[in-house]
Image (cartoon, rainbow, N blue to C red; front, side, top):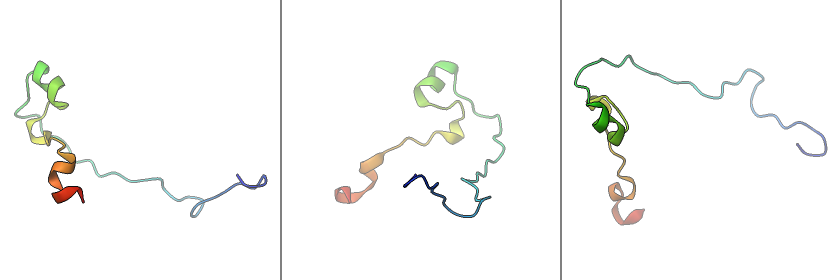
Length: 59
């Protein structure tokens, strides 16, 4: 808010975001202990974050 004026961005019905979430099939599940370690119970969704390792020279 600047000088009491409300700041607005985009049209009044501008959506904040949209998601596409496909149905997850219940197959190849991790056991509960391993699922907690991996952050997912679905083997098909186990994509470890490698961060800067994926970018040569950190750029």
